[in-house]
Image (cartoon, rainbow, N blue to C red; front, side, top):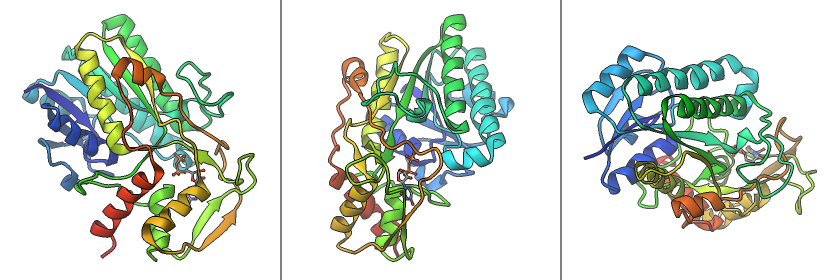
Length: 326
Ligand code: UDP
């Protein structure tokens, strides 16, 4: 069985991807320091607990499993936090990735798939966003992910590493069989916060900005189901193993949904009213972000299956009700 080393495989997107990898016949070996991830989300292969900045640890794990591909999710990924604590982001995201890349190079692993982000684009100059749009990140989070993308390209040129950088838009939803879901502490993402407000786990939902140049004044994002993101990663493994060219891929549905539309969907799916309060825009939040994902369609034959916002929100509500609402 081909082994894929999955850093951050105990986290939200990483764990869903491990399930998809196992279903596709791969053996996902998770490396996670469990600082944010959950050991009980690692169900489809072994878990090796440790930090990717520890090269002795990494080399041991690689010697034990001989992975053919590395998939790298382990990172800090909160835009607001990155502005206030850039040290953490430069250390976890850049030093961590470099340590991993060095282990990959020394152990002659041929393929690397990076969890990247639409935050590499910053404020878009045109919509929908294409992969070759200008990359001017406006947060340390986006800057660190872009730096790792540059490192991948340089490792590709110098050492022949094959890579894919997966630029997610807004990952959302939960496993449709209820086996996995989104658990962040503290929670900062719009859909889980709205569900918590609807189910009375928080008193109120704060809408960040009502004066954007959008039809209802709230910010628009491209919400893409986590199972579709996981599927794209499996396709990227197959693509690189079949000799595909290294590339960056936008992962989004191309559909923009506003914060107020998310709240409507959560109210529909829970049958509960959400108390909302409008507050000023969150610093660094663009008005609208949505993807042109034609490259993933063309090269990976990736076509997101769960594009409807009610399906995305419904899967998250269901996960929340079964796992967190007690
Ligand atoms: N948002 C909001 N209230 C919240 C959390 C988020 O209005 O309590 C907005 C946020 O400002 C952004 C959108 O919802 O416009 C998506 O934010 P999220 O943090 O989920 O993802 P991001 O786009 O930052 O990756």
